[in-house]
Each structure stands twice: as C-alpha cells, then as structure tokens.
Image 1 (cartoon, rainbow, N blue to C red):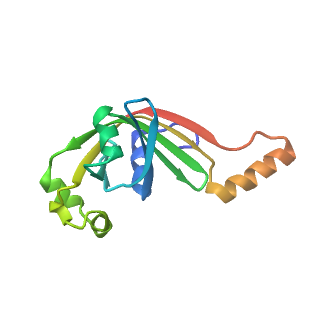
Image 2: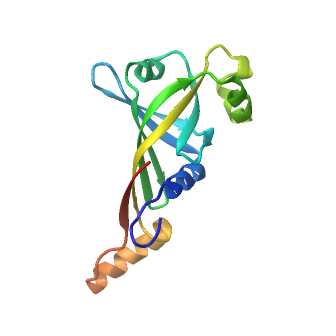
Length: 161
C-alpha cells in the first residue's frame, strides 16, 4: 500500500500472495456466519484466490447455499478484508498445477481424492488497515504520537477488484 492511503488491485494481490493462511467466512442458510482457516493455493493477477476444499461438511454446504464470502488476512500490524464470490470449479489441469505437499495432508487420495474440491473466490472489493513498518514499528510510532500529541500512524484504503 502506498503512503497516500490508496489501495490498488496489485496491492491486494501481493498481500494475498504473501499470506499462507486466510480466514474464509461464509453464511449458513440460517444466516449464521461460519469461518475456517484456509491455505491459499494460488492468487491470480485478477485477485482470484484458489483453495482446495472438502466437498462434504458444513463449509461445503455453506458455500453451496450462498456464494458471498469474505477473506480475512492479518499480518504484523496490518489487516486485509476481501469481499468476493465463491464458486466450485471443475478444472483437473489447474488442480494438478496447484497441488502441493500441504494439500496432500488434507486429501490423502491426492489429486484424484473424491472429497477434493477446487474453490475460486473472485474478489469484488477489498479493505486494508495498517501501520507503516509493521507491528513493532507501528507500536513505537503510536507511543511517540501519544507522547508528542501527534496523530497516530496508520492508514486505510479501499478498492474495487
């Protein structure tokens, strides 16, 4: 993110690529929210985020009943929230391309595991909050601002994807 508090699609893509895990939140048919930590398998230049997901259970049911989701990322004094639309995708070539050892621990049948689903979250908008320099530097800047009466550091930015 730039210092003028603007957020670009490329900023969002880079922050997602830097994240190993995100929290994926879906809405159940009764309106309750359901969140799961998810391992990102890939992020496109268009801010599409790819996951491997079980085709059975509460999360799959929630994803089938409502496609609007949220991805949340937290990293050393910064937070990113991406609103988007989720869809299951049938693409064996992409499954093969994204496959890795971490996925195998969840899907022991490999790329042919009958429980393996490929999920795409197409980002629609993103909101970022953060402090320059990360958590430790940000904390030092907050303490300094409080002592000097200056405005605390940090910024926020929003973008359509």
